Image (cartoon, rainbow, N blue to C red; front, side, top):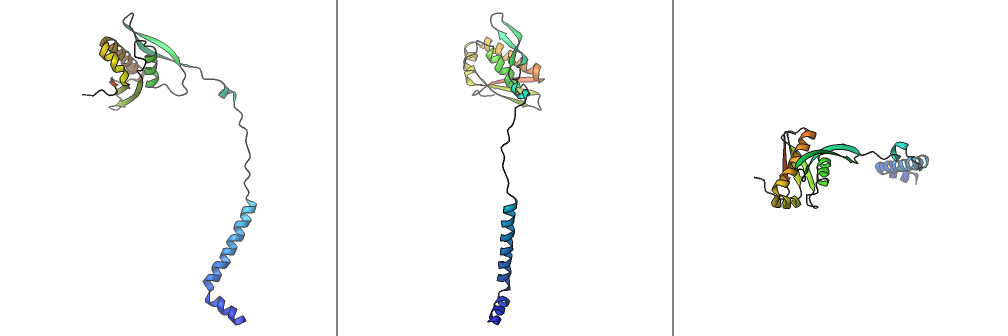
Length: 168
């Protein structure tokens, strides 16, 4: 019988080697799982006093058309912003301060083209009704936007587009 066991191991060296290797891996993985227990603890994060203080509104200056005096006037208004002030912040303030605009008129986007020399400001199609009914008022609004954007963002040209209008 001893020869049969010896013959069995001689014929199945690879199987025996793999079996021993599997047992060693199981022993080490079991040992590692017992030793390396990760404990998750809840950490209370205390807010600093700086987080409790609301950020003060930033004052921005922009131009709006005053239909009673028929003059483009420079005005300022505070906006709440935790980031830097961008074109949309100025245009949205101009829209808010221009009571003659349709209530649905909205700023959609601003694009810089020609290596930053030109700015395209896009409005919702609702602004088209002002352009069709009172072109002088529309042009004065456009002039106030152009004046604000060229002054604040140092671009050479500002193009106003109404979404849905074809560009020729």
